[in-house]
Length: 266
Image (cartoon, rainbow, N blue to C red):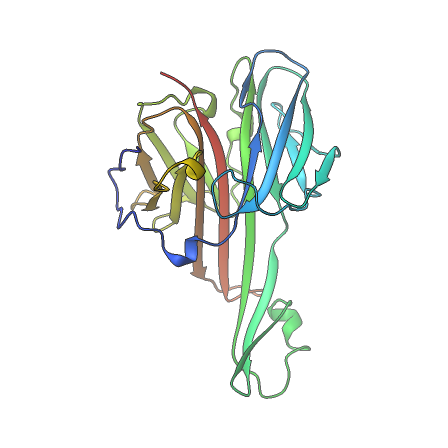
């Protein structure tokens, strides 16, 4: 059973909007002691945490090395229920696996009482919108899924915020997360802590529990979500943020992120 965070937790009941398929990455190992080891990575879009449902494209899967460099992962396979990748970690330090698709622009509008859409930003939509279109709004959306793996000594380079979109930071290194010890996550938008980010925390084993035992949360005024993992295992955070913006390309921005991590035995 997870301990509630000391935060603005409204309810533990899952809203319908958060029951849609969630995309996640799960490495076979989060901590390793042998350099040049291989790990297997599972990825899926699913309703239950870490229970695969739909295979997804891994063409955008990247590995960020301890020195900050990145490379595309080529050994991938997309199956019906899940996708898989084989990844070799060359040396000591912390790595980041990330599946990040480029931003997408979608323009929504009404025509003759029907809601329609087209894939175009504000600059492109002018030439594509039909005559008589009303209630026009363009949304910039982006999603990212990631996990950290550490070989021997933890390092911090891959933990550095990129300063773009929705990101998660923490005062506890991912390799040092231990059951029954408090955790604090900061959710950032464009490099700055952001309040009112909505999220859900879940952990492995939902298939074998009568209750999912998920926790809904909203970040506080410092962009923080706190909780104490009472048991070891694999956990998942899924979070999203949307806001009106004034830009040449969009009227609204929507960001989503999923982060899988491991909690070690105390």
